[in-house]
Length: 555
Image (cartoon, rainbow, N blue to C red; front, side):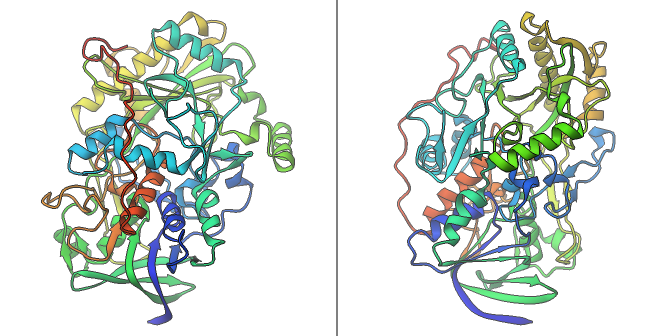
């Protein structure tokens, strides 16, 4: 084993959403010596930095781990891809740049389930600290944080037509779903600043590196955490075909994400005993929750043909793409400067649901995540899916190899309630699309298809076409010390191992309502205060919206 002479106060594994925020905050005082280990390479180049090009990096081996989940029985045996960022900035460098804090009810659930100190009142100050919001509601949003959050121009007439349709359907329009009221429809927030993707690397890591007390090693494939007795002491990683070891004087923080964090811990001998033994790994600590509780958002694309040639499909030709790219390269403006997800919505699926459990993304083009469009040409679509599936999966290593991918099993739609909720998603989407405001634009339904109306037909469509929203989380769940399935305590300390913390989306007790980039960054922000022994930010006194008739009415 080749050994580096260097020792660090803190070692952070992963430069993604939480890891970059951790590096920034842990290094803020200048008193600590910090190492960040990242397997991926540079995030430079238009495929990452140009917002409209978002479909490219998550389909490129250079930037993506290339994970493929196990076959899903409920999806006709399909194996869905599970893109994870293998690049500086992690998944924040390949995601859709959609910024959603989540609902207050999500964090109150966390607190009530054993993650004490992570209620909405506790986490709201951290969202404010991290944000520099442009266009959000005053008082509810941060205005001087590292993370710029902006809104797109929404100049395609389909956005106004869609919002008019949701009003006709009886839903509210909200000025800021990340503020007082999430329930309703309105302009989407995106992590874009001055026309560029404002990833965690751009917002946090690069400013942190300029301070001089943080070292970033890229191309570093972490093999395992070294554990002496019941304390983490260092990290073993590979780079350039050589094996290295680094040690931490204070703590190691694992921020490698919902797939890689449990994988690294299992390779380190920590996890379900039977899983480790089957993989040929000596058991250091039998902890059943490591790799369990895997959750995700599943969604479908409800696509409608457009009667007018006004959709983004008119730019699906080489000449337009060249012009869009040139304008972006020269001025960081135009269509290239937006992710095009400029209108979002959150509603409750039924009376008796306390807060929204369906999310909508409206897009003025019919297109798949891989960038391909249907043969029909001009169209528009709703991405829609349930937010709080009861299905749970797992992440398990199959051997001890550093380069071996883990087994990823989501068990999508394995709970009967998931099917009921998904059918409601599609029927409520159709109701909105059928409103008079959409009539000048609404052609035939491309998918599922106008004639697909029965439960059986809708279920068949879901099985054949449901896709992951790429929001894995929950595999190192935070909870109470006496919870046998919890992995970390509410200060992010690994239960049973000293000097080790986990800070990323793997610690979420339950998936949040919306995209996960914002909650992941917040986790890094809050974990940093716990690590440094700081008094947490004062709890907020703000009371968020809850529909007064939620028990009696769906809207």
